[in-house]
Image 1 (spheres, one colour):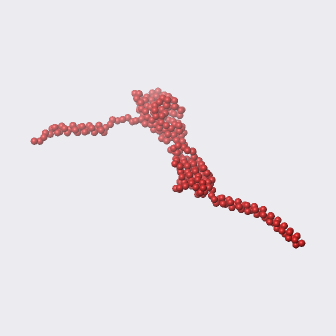
Image 2: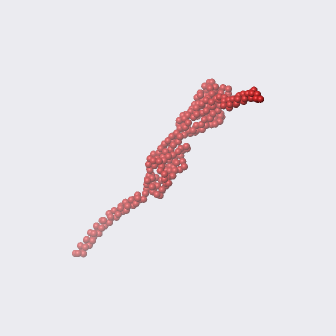
Image 3: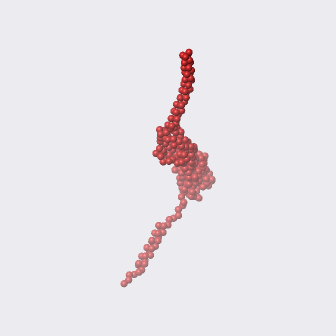
Length: 278
């Protein structure tokens, strides 16, 4: 006797529908609204340039915007606020006169300085009085001047003195490179770089270490190179040559003094000889 097929069929259909429902719940998610974001343009700012903090995905039903200095929304840190319905801008306690707030929520900061480095927070108020908050970041770098190479000893003695060369004034977020005779530093146990590579130490200098030396300072917004710097290395041959010259001068001086005396002595001798003969 075959088992009835009806109940088996009824059990199969609900399971397939249940699996389909589970798969739909697993792979389908309701659409979400794009999040408010802040873009810094340019991303790396040079001191003295103009920078935009661009607001992306700002809701079109905004009541107004407000920019604050720092990562928190505080009235004492308000730069400026803008109301959409009457196109009115109100400036806050930290407004410097260099900021401008656009109707789309973007903030312009003109002629930035290193003191402008930090966080900036945008508050967007919607017409239903709901709010969105997002923070952007600005980092301002100095434009580096040409570095000047300085030395602790510009006239070192060969094999005796150690020279320390320094590349310009110390600045943050700056990397340094060195060249000797228009080439990168050779591998040598006598050449030592500091951890930040700003100072180059030449141990027991030789006459081949005169240079010229050139250093480069670099940060994210600028690159500058120094003028060539040359060491005047002194060595023992110079000292001996100077000694020979001095001795030669002394000998010539002595001869100039002794020659007249010798001539005078000769004439005295002749005169004495003549007197004796007579």
